[in-house]
Length: 264
Image 1 (cartoon, helix red, strand yellow):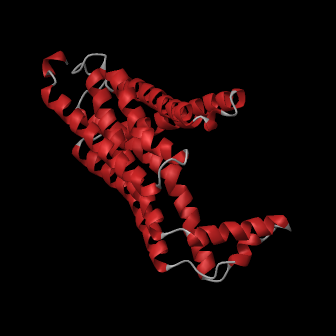
Image 2 (cartoon, one colour; image 1 turned 180 degrees about the vertical axis):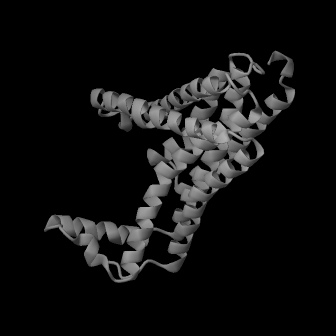
């Protein structure tokens, strides 16, 4: 049973939590101040992510992993499947959501606000809530109140819970920091891809922008899939993702600067 969680680990976890919640909230406030009514686009972005990634995509995963239980054993197939399904579901949802939003407002702020909602809710649901729970467990360990975490457990369950607590306490501070870093990159990716799809919807770009967004999303997800497959470590994953997100953002910026407003 761990007696304490080192202060650097707690501090890095708190910093990641601040990033995970603070960046989306801060971006949402900023875009809403600059462009009134952006709150609706943020909510649509969040809704489209939940439906596409947490409902429809999970249904497909359930079917595929049931039919092909050994798919994880083939790293190439597993990575291709994970990357392409994420790109297809999320970019299709982004296209449909922005099509609806741009019927009334075609300003760039709509695309940006959608990206804040899409990336923000993903950060909160995927990492934020887990980080809150982890910090609560850390507090219980450091305050010597771990018995409350074991209430209602018996026999092997207690042993397993104690092992999990020990593993959590042993997680390096840099790994807690990586969680916030990863979400920051993901939010940046969603903002860039939302602007790309916005350009397609507003006819600044031809229709090829939609499959391009799927491809860019899939490629940007590759480091995370390789990490899940156990091929690369945490920080190589984060730095590879950062490079890919920067490249995607620069590409979208160039497309935006050279797009034809006359097509609107």
